[in-house]
Length: 275
Image (cartoon, rainbow, N blue to C red; front, side):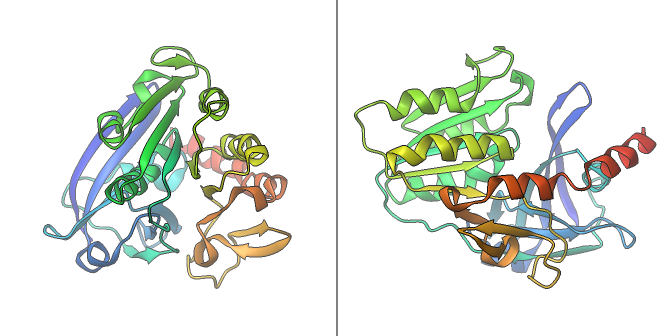
């Protein structure tokens, strides 16, 4: 579980997005698109889930990309090449259903771009025509641009501040696309909850299958703790074992937003202590 390679792929003001390649022979052999790992940086730390962005069977490594936002991601970003993680478990969660859909729209917001990367790669290999929409706050926070464009038939970028691509949000592009005469068979979106919610609301009138990968609060990742509860079609589901992907049109978004904001103030307090 050693860090083989570390790269700061984006650094803007106080925001850092980090890419780690980690030695994980067993996980690298089994990982599929859409799955994740749960890791601990140190014995006294918490467990956090991170999507497996890539896996190299020959080198027996997995790739993780994350933004330093809370205490644990800041500690993780502080590790150096040669350092070891205290614990690493995976692959967890249900893999993405990869098949020939036809015309697919992939939407990535912020670091969610890293999470749609393995799905884009797999869907392209199945012969799907992929329209990709990437959205970030500013150009300096854009990641995996060339990699995602390589898999895309149509490719769009939006920035909140207009520093690159089109000024606005991914949903602005989605609105335009959905008014075209082309039939779309699947929308797959990963990013901030408000973004995924609006994608769901936009696609629902068109009756397009829309899948989102939910970043619900998670502890053990095996369904034991119940921390990652989400309400889908009026039923309680666990993101770790029933997901992380769900039908966006069936998710109770109000409940998800409320649960995910439970510890924000405590996280901010801890992060301020580290400054």
